[in-house]
Image (cartoon, rainbow over all chains, first blue to last red; front, side):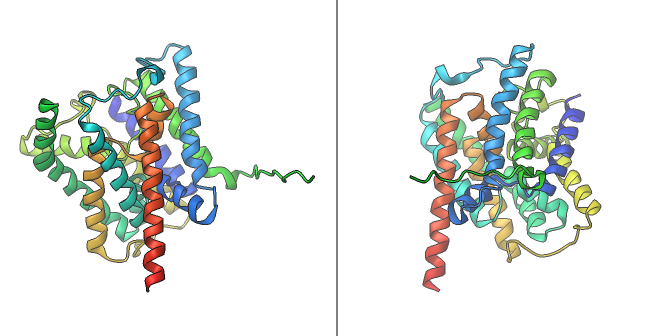
Length: 146
Length: 168
């Protein structure tokens, strides 16, 4: 069931993503550099859509443990991971701006036939395997220490 | 005193990105609430953990490794990344926009390095910007802080590009 559901969600969002040129990173970039809010509204849309979806589905019997999480504060265990996570998010945003698109947009460009999108996804696949082999053991060590 | 003129373009074409974003938020909530795409929470749409789970599932099944996969995706792989590519391909084909062409990153090696580097950095945080926004809408304070960090990262990159252009 999950395979089918995720495939259908992917197809819908892939189609819409191509038609709308949706991109979270370019949204912030365009708004900052050009005051063009077209793509930035997409990022705002996720937050609004999420709030609407979580709130309504929560009322009609959906499973949302702890929603809303506001009362739990930052809630990261172990706290030692917080600077690493912030570093990771900053780096992702910085290099995604250089790559002219967020990871979602790169998948869309793959489907459009953009060569750099296809090569980017190849790098992403190798990067995932590298992360599993090299980075994960260190993170596990930090988790034990923390 | 003149009041500032406030106008909003309600045309569908001017709001397609907004509609896509709204759909992402709502579908992420529906996937979690009704199709058990959890734990962790807000896992309905993510352009980092979904490809990561899919790649790890394939590698584990082909080579017998034990790379980490979220519990929900152990038996059946997550297929959103495949859906995005096929969905985009159908949309591009239907609108006569499909064409194998270069760019936007001009150098192939650089595009590969970006993919490699970005997934490693993003996995340190554990989400893409889309899931970060979904988690922020779930009310997780840390996700709101990360969303602000992402905005700062983009602004710093923009300033770096501007500085580099001025030097040329």
